[in-house]
Length: 188
Ligand SMILES: [Zn+2]
Image 1 (cartoon, rainbow, N blue to C red):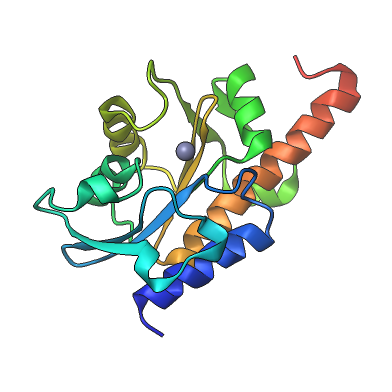
Image 2 (spheres, rainbow, N blue to C red):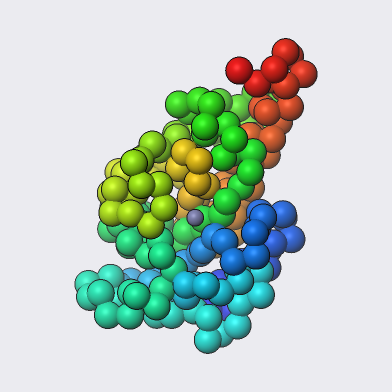
């Protein structure tokens, strides 16, 4: 199984975990040395084929226009952190909480065990912008997962499974926190 097969498998796992709300949303990539392997723009993350993944060089922008619109965010995260894989999805509960709070704090014990809090990144242009790429590069130096306000979650790992772990953990934390605040007397 090579890195392209691993990316295809990771896309399926994200779908099976319910992390893909709209068919063509989200993206994922893996890094080997100076090469980034990333989903092409407009492909369905849960049904990727080998030709849907493009190999890019970190040091040249050739082919970037074919890649996911968040390709610069992926590259900047790789340039600024030890990440070997990145997953991004439009996770509904994390998006809702990101619109209400400046950071997402776990109320459940599993969430607290792994994460003290999850940063929320605020940007004028929250999709496919250099502003997002720069802010993610900075935030992911110190964090495994972050949420772009009103847009979605980015998670990194030493491999794709670890990135998926943090992305699904973030959504689980957000889901439980949402329900907790709702039953306690309204998400405020
Ligand atoms: Zn997105």
